[in-house]
Image 1 (cartoon, helix red, strand yellow):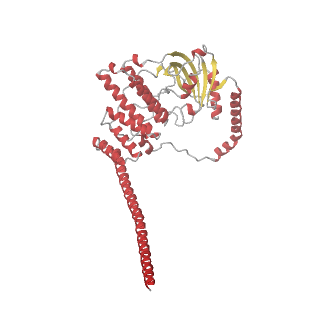
Image 2 (cartoon, rainbow, N blue to C red; image 1 turned 120 degrees about the vertical axis):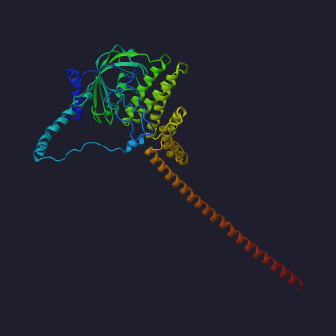
Image 3 (cartoon, one colour; image 1 turned 30 degrees about the vertical axis):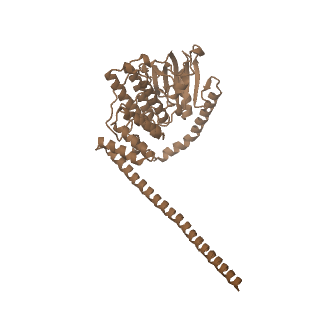
Length: 438
């Protein structure tokens, strides 16, 4: 079955089929409050990057550990299994015989897709065909549509082209437009009315992208969702919340950022970390206790460190430097921030400053191999930079010497010419006197 046909089958199953035993609705879940456990702050610079999330669904509590050094991921090894390409003659024959039926399947899938395109009930949300919505049950009117920033509660049942169920919730709550869920939900729910039930078909770009999600959602997979908008509430006022409640909200967004980072969706990860920091910055200082201030500062350090890692991934060194400095304002001896700051300064070719910062990090963790390696690289690059500057200076001095030689030769020629003219003038003058006396 082709992916297109599978997607259509998923739509038909959601409309007419009974809910299979494999899809058991999960307990009510909120993406705005609550905590999935303490975050374990890893010590110093690690050799592994942020790990992929567990089997947490859309909200995605990615990793309970803070992000480590991002560049180390690039040195990891793929562990994908190898596909045995051997095929018996009988298998080849069966494959050959199946070709006509496969062509027929493709043709049937194309017809179904054309039929869907012709169905006026399907709304192409972005006009690209990548995200479509169909109303199954009308809502309570246009004025009940949620607005960006409001708290929405929905029921969800998702399906892969294979028919497997994913993201099944009786209730799940999130802030609309904050990036707490897959983009397909944010975009589709914004067009739903209170009480409306709708089908949403999304391409991977607005689902789980090229990376997929762990073992349950393969890479580059289309998804079909049945969504129902259950409740719309006003945006939470941070000023009315306690520091602990604000920290819980911010930590959810940090975890979401970690999940996005693990899927290499760095831009949206930056958005999630920034949202978390906005919440933390809006806490009134007057509401702090000694313990809550410590908790807020620790969470800020994690968010700024992770933000810097993501900013480095999208080639935004100035922003990453600012994030590193924000960490160091709170924790001047934070090794991760010092390490990343050194990396940023190296990108900006400020090798002397980069080496100094990296040495400071190494002094805090003398046995850290990653810092040793990076410091060796920076020292070598600094030496190369000095050698290049020396050679450039020598070339400049040589060129200047050649330039100064030209006027000296020219000056000599001018003096010789002047002397010759003077002698000639004197000779003519003497000759004229002698002639007059004769």
